[in-house]
Length: 171
Image (cartoon, rainbow, N blue to C red; front, top):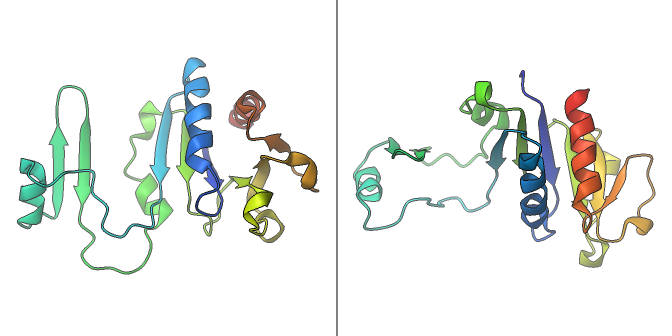
């Protein structure tokens, strides 16, 4: 892997996507080209919609469906009826890393790669970092409640998180 990868992990409903929606534009302002991989627990999600030609062709049996325009393209790959979760390493291989400076990952908390934990004490969930050596920082809505040697950031202040990511890219 030649491109730095950094994950954002937490229990569902903690605010990973909301945080990333604040961070990504700030990274983009710094001309950092970002690839993104997001895990979903919805087994049969669709980016395509019923009635569209590409959806109908995929439903008819196309195992891979690539939809392209002058502005973007998307590839849908059917995974048969496999029950196991997708492998992050396998998914990373599908990104065009020559056009990226950083790969952000939302989810895949059980895989070993550098991750930032997002935590909200009010949800009553346990912290992940004590049992996961690959967590490199913690983002929290109540940072004073966390005790660790890891860097801790307030999730309502995205700029220090962006500075941490920039420093991470330089190492």
